[in-house]
Amino acid sequence: MIRLIQCAKSFGTHVVFDDLNLEIAAGEHLAIFAKSGYGKTTLLRMIAGLEKPTKGEITGCRPEQIAFMFQEARLFDSLSVLDNVAIVSPQPLKSAKPYAQALLDELGLASVGASFPPELSGGMKQRVALARTFLPNREILLLDEPFSALDEGTKIIARQFVEKHARGKTLLLVTHDPSDAAALCERVLKLDA
Image 1 (tube, one colour):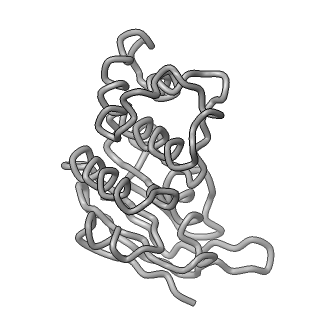
Image 2: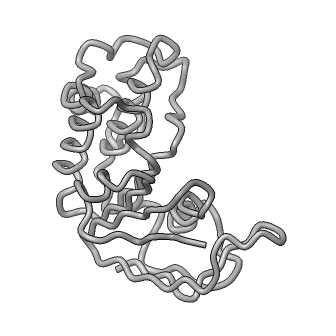
């Protein structure tokens, strides 16, 4: 179980949130829903250990348990799409490539493995980043707006991919789209002013 105990986060005089208490059960799928600028990404970054709370404590998760998908694709331009996905595997690159290719296939990217990120559209890059997030097979998945660059048809494929591969794992999905939350999560945390 992940616990946030009386957590607060401030940047200078700007208070993002204060006195946040939250429990996330192992295997739970939780959507973090809010408008832009309300601290969704900051909360995910704190759980991932990329930001420290100004006060309070976060327990129940270690970095080696976590896979984090950032809002930006953050791909390596000098690596092929296939290598961008396979590189995060704990296995040797050569051994990881078949599974990386299978993940790309599921996301409708079967033909782009040899391409390089600058050759891809924004939506394609986002799907590559999504595939890369699921390759290491981590217990806790932190997804920050994973469908924001996708058209409606591609979003359905990506949601089905997440639903399949997140089974039995703890999922925290940051979104501003209520339909994403409804499709993938049992519970919604709404951050508000």
